[in-house]
Every structure is written in structure tokens, then in C-alpha cells.
Length: 288
Image (cartoon, rainbow, N blue to C red):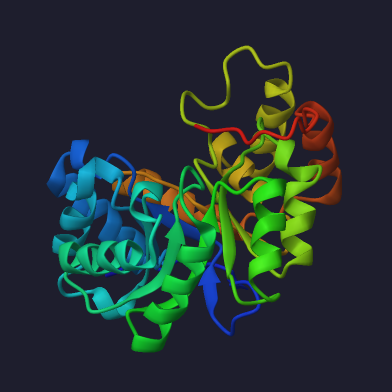
């Protein structure tokens, strides 16, 4: 019998699309044990984690190929996202070619969401032109951006009307909150969802020796949950935030899924906010 967890859903930007708050990332999929990763991803889909995220840059396309194999009989059950590398985003024709190459590796005829992975040397004008063209031909359903700073979002706003772009996918977790000062509010005003990747950081969690850890551990004990589940539930407190929790072990994937049903109290959130304060925004974006 499938283990079904009642995930909460949230609207993607101003689209009519609703996604589970907790989705699945595939960074370093090519380095994982394939069979264990396959079981983990499929377990997540069965538990409601139907938003799957990948990128042409992950393993130089290998992650897309492996995910395509895993989704062979499940493509229509998932919302599939991939990302174009900025080196392939200086001309609209190159963006289009990269999108079709990603689709071939994934074994699909369309992407549900296509993102510019980070600004780099990309031409945002050319990207937006390509994204619109790909939408018109049905190769992508929605588009957005990733790793966009406040300045980058301002540039996007000048090129594209409110609601056209769906999201800004960004590094964000309990111990890394700089985007809250200006980037997150700017995205909200633009009608963007914020999709948090590496929502437990990119190393050991909770961060060893952090003075806020006793507070996190106390709240986890009160809810009969893990510290990771509490940290994921804290991220989901904001109405415009969804997250991508990567795991290649089925038991961890199901625990991540269950975090969407963990209800933190206002006192819990206030205590975590105080224990893990946001550093000042310095105009730069954190990266994992």
C-alpha cells in the first residue's frame, strides 16, 4: 500500500497552478545509488511530492537522463522543472536548443516550468524572448528565474509584466535568511513564488555549534518531530514560499514530505526567528 501524506499546496506565482509546498530536488542525482534514488523519488511522488526539479547543469545532463528513466511511467503524475545554464542563454536560439535538449534527456515533450539557472553572462532579454516562444509552441508551460538578486529582479520587472514570470528559485533556509530583507518582498510585489532550494543548507544540519540549536531542538521535541522537519515547516510559514527538499533515501524523503503537515505555533516561529536572526542584506545572494 502506498504511504500517502496530506501535503499542503500553494499557488505558483499568479498562475492557476497549485504545487505541493514540499517538492524534490535532484542535485547530485548522478552521484547517488541509482536504485535507492529511484525508490526514494518514487516514494516521494506517491506521498504527494510531485514537483520534481532538475537542471542541464546537474552532472552535465546526467541528472536529467537519470530522472527521465525514473519518471518513464510517471511523467504525467509530476510537475517537472528544469533550468538553462547562463552560457546557453546569450541568444534566444541557444535557449530554445537547450530546452529541447533537456526535454530529450528527460524523455518528455514539454517542461512544466523552465528557469534561467542564474544570471551569469546571460542576456535576460534573449531569455524572455525564448521563454515566450517556447510557451507558444507548447515546449514549456511556465517560466521563471533562479538565483536572482534585488537588482536582477528589478531588471526582470522592466522587461516583463507582473505575473508573466512564475518564480525565483533561491538558496534559503533557517540559518541563511538574508533574502528576507529585500529580495523576498520584491518577489512578492512582482507576484513571484519563492522556491527555496537546499532548505536545510548544503552541509550538516542543524549547523554545528549554532547558538540557536537548543531552541530548534526544544521545539522539535515538543512536536515529536525532527529538527529538519521543524526547519522545513518554518520555511513554509510564508504564503509565497515553496521548497525543494533533496533526499535519496526513502525514509528521509517521507519525513520531508510529512513536514508540510507540521503546524508551528506563532510562539514557535517567534522563537526560531530570534534564535536564527537574519544577517543584513549586502546586495549579494548566498549560494550553497
